[in-house]
Length: 47
Image 1 (tube, rainbow, N blue to C red):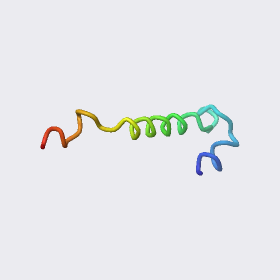
Image 2: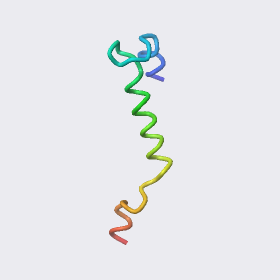
Image 3: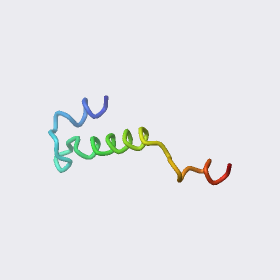
């Protein structure tokens, strides 16, 4: 919501306060959330 209201009118590139960096963070967060922790999770070490 904030990306659309604040950064979208400025264009794509982060140098002009655009949404490029925010879009990258969003894509990485969705990717990590969909893949899951895998073998490096604390649960695999503790249990």
